[in-house]
Image 1 (cartoon, rainbow, N blue to C red):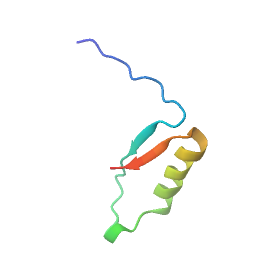
Image 2: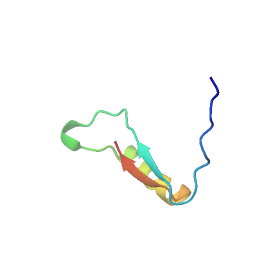
Image 3: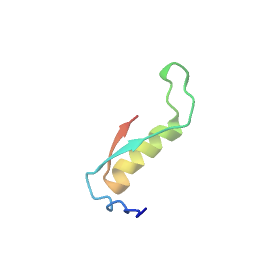
Amino acid sequence: MKLIPPKRLADGDKVASISTLWSAAGDVSYRYLKGKERLNQVFNLEVTET
């Protein structure tokens, strides 16, 4: 089987965010929100939650 490496991410690409954190009744962790914000600000990626 030949592995195909993914293309490098570019500005404006959409990425999925998967969190292993448990959140009660939709209470989202501060650390998760900061990480999502930094992905957008530092790497200019559009983050979608899964």
